[in-house]
Length: 344
Image (cartoon, rainbow, N blue to C red):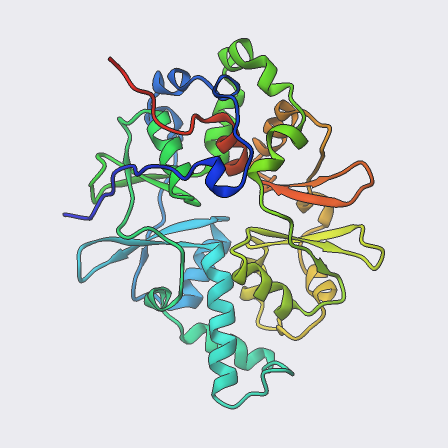
């Protein structure tokens, strides 16, 4: 197996993104993560569900939903190697792809296709259709080894903006052992006493100062918008979550890419329905909508995001308005150095 494995590239600087420069002393000491191997993050008991590239989309969707997964690796039997990772973010694109294909075949785009026809179009897709989508992914299949340091894995997640990092016996291996998520790494960091001992000042900084400069400008949608509009915004802006506002502009709910697993698996879901109606078919929003305030500390954000149920935090300003969506990836970007440490 000779899958292409990429080396770390030079990261984009904060200045290039328009963010203010951060004091290096305010980032986490890289040696803390260098002292731990990725192997320590592997679950005691677990399995990696692998999807074949020729698998019909309906089965890939069922696998995401039944295993509660956000990402699953894709194996190409013809090439005898892993070639991709199928994620909930991809599922948003696939749902829209099926809708547009159906509209192009004669269904009125504005009115939306019948729910049953849309479901049939979705089921006709295969995982190979992912390659026809415009996805901001690095070339090749990125992996890390269980023997690599957590710093190496964290920097790969950060520098390549990965939703997950496949972990194998070696960095170029057909033996896949785990998919490392940013929130799993963050949960491990939250357990390290040396993090608070050495970097208490950073952890006590307010979210508004330490994290918001690393978050994108918030995109929101009104509750009376259509599900199609909301999914289109998730896809076009490459968002993991979209705050939903009521008529007064206050936070009403959140639509995340994870929610699309349930919406897409329901044959009755019509993309033309009001977003509010679609949200009612999801689990109670109290379990899905997690928030933080700009005045909350970084330590508070880490604790909340370390909860597997908290996919993201909607950050609210003092007036209660949405000012950002904080993810585990954003917190890692704040904690990690901008480049690997140099030895010697």
